[in-house]
Amino acid sequence: MDLVPSGTLVVRVALAALVLLVGGCAWDGPMSTVVPGSDFARATLWLYALITWITAVIGLLVFVVLLWILVRFRARPEAPLPAQIRGHTLMEIAWTIVPALVLLVIAVPTIQLTFRTQGVAAPRDALRVTVRGWQWWWEFRYPDLDVVTANELHLPVGRAVVLDLEGPDVIHSFWVPRLGGKRDVVPGRHNRIVLTPERPGEHWGQCAEFCGASHANMGLRVIVQASAEFDAWVARQKAAPAEPAGLAAEGKAIFARSACVGCHTIAGVSGGVLGPNLSHFGGRTMLAAGMWPNTPDNVAAWVRDPQRLKPGVKMPDLGLTDEQAKAVAAYLTGLK
Ligand SMILES: [Cu+2]
Image (cartoon, rainbow, N blue to C red; front, top):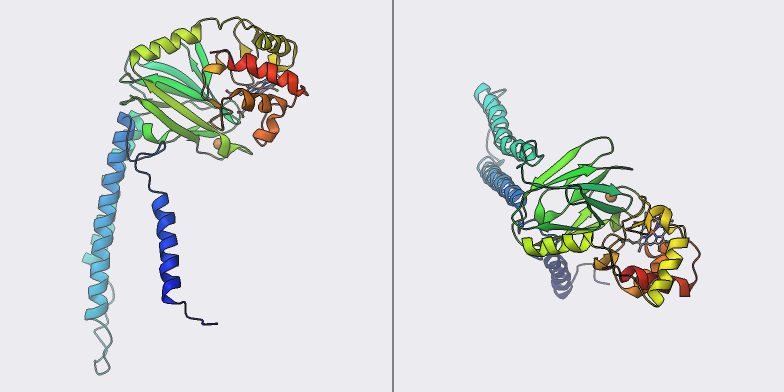
């Protein structure tokens, strides 16, 4: 066999590598950090650009000087030993002070932005949301609106929001790239994020701090809406869901007499707090923290055996039959 790779092989490998590389280059993907959807994300992008340009110029400078030195002072056969220099005060002072200045230029705006978005001086009319990171889902409480939901955070466009981050179990990290940088959710510690969403749309997020078996399956969605749409959503959350009929009514009865009530709240039915609030579960697009589309089939499979759909999940298999799971799914997906 020929040990030197043939020309076509090199071209093929290079093309394959290029395809893989370009595949990662969605410009405005749902988790893009370079197409900001809030003031926080815009400021973060500005910092990112600042640091990139500073380091690019330094990098270029270093390589040009290096190249010049390599060529200019290369060893020549007949050349005598060059002058042997030891220490150079001016240069040593310069290469101490210049990097310190560069770090200062990076640190000052970074620290400013970190503190600004920690919300010490949040606007008075800001919407407040308590974000609780649980293994492996997100709870959202709107204390002033008396609304509780999970995994899909609705926000009105153009209004400042203060997210109070709480960790009831272990450390998580709240990250919605298009809305700003990630911030840790730490038990016993009160972190905040203050931002103003600037464009409507669905922004995807992800827990960004390893938190156990299904960490990778701990996604979230932020749905930024025009203020009238947001108000309509709030009104729906506060209204009692329609009374179920037929199969869904059967599902309600099964739910109400099962252990489900110990972990889940459904307004007017149960008051558990260990799992997501299901009062308006049918209004959510996804199941299990962004993992599966919220369809009756998926929900039935979930209720039947949650472990199969999400490794490590903190919801037990309650031994419902397929028929019972179907009925419960009809009930839950009907709770709009
Ligand atoms: Cu995590």
